[in-house]
Length: 262
Image (tube, rainbow, N blue to C red; front, side, top):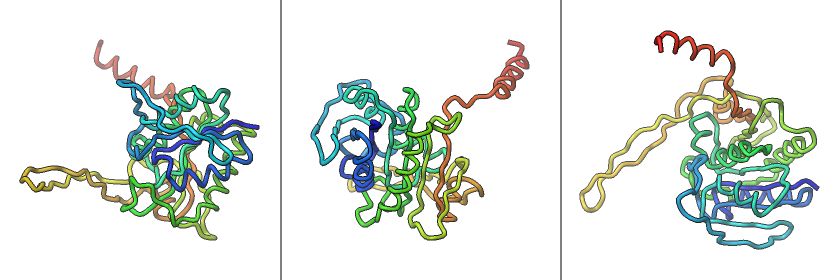
């Protein structure tokens, strides 16, 4: 039986995490390792300036769940300690699409998957679009995750059978808010961004200013993950490649250095 580690950045009460665990536990030797609370937008950050503490370690029905007080990428390191010979890391299901490099590089969900890939493991990040008022929450209690988990499980099983697609470090899977009979799976390039960040200035009760970073949706380019998920309501599957620098880029930088006469 294959050994899978399931993690996320929304914490142990996330309905998406628990639903996917239920789908995976009967066909895999499953361990769930997650932060003990909400850690969205933490990227691939790690806890290096203090000890990590396990806050819960118990066997659920069909799998072991470990929670800790660190960041999502710390879950990968913790999983390596508590479970040997893991075959795959799965991160999600996140509340909010992680489409476009802006979100990919910020996301704790994708960050955990990238940390796993850096350590040599196949990895999948799974996210689902939600309304903006449910970003950074453990939302999804009213969502029917069955179809999402079924499709995600098919992709996970194919990776376990045949390996990752060539030159792919992480598969980034994003679901729209609603899945209909017209919803398709589309292989996409990540867009550059899905939001324009703005600063909103407010005044606290003591008269001092404070600032919120506010994300405003922008029109996504066609044929990108953001466009397919948010505009067309399709499922996006995008490769993330860590070692993506080609000889062409290296030659361009060599030409740049030569032009400086260094």
